[in-house]
Image 1 (cartoon, one colour):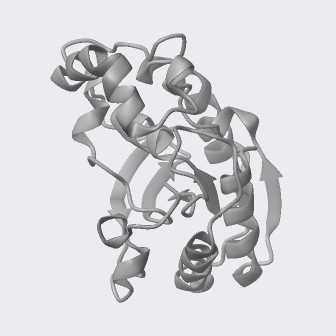
Image 2 (cartoon, rainbow, N blue to C red):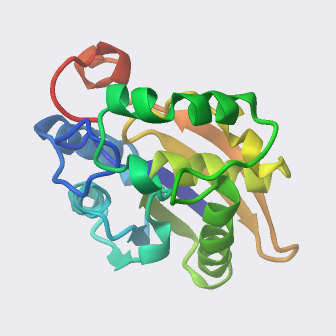
Length: 213
């Protein structure tokens, strides 16, 4: 049983975790990942309820024509009082906390928000239910913090060390999970695969200078 975790497409704001529409580039990214997985026989699509994830799922699903189910617990990590701030504002107000988090000595929550362990506690039951009850090929459109936290859980890592798994995940990258229903275990088959975006540097995070995130 395969689960393809897909990070949402580029959103129309650079501010932290605001619930906004996809940028035009985000729709292009979603189309590319949809086309790449078109031959994988995707039988169901799950997404978080945030606009950027729902719209990514809808755009990619034009290539799959699968049932689309919204799962609110697949939402991004709660950044608490950082939400709605720019990167500069975050570092000005919470730089000390950010530096402590980067040491990965403890699973420190965002101010008034969640830590990776909190994300795992709400996301792991969703993935396990999909693994046990879903069809054989499933796409899950979610968020970078969710994908990195889930990968750390599957690999048996301490939650606070999830930052070791990709500094930044590319928008509409693919992280593939295999679920063994006889043994009840996930394995991580690939992580942050964005080969479908590489021919288009303007769609990669490193080559983008416009508005959005």
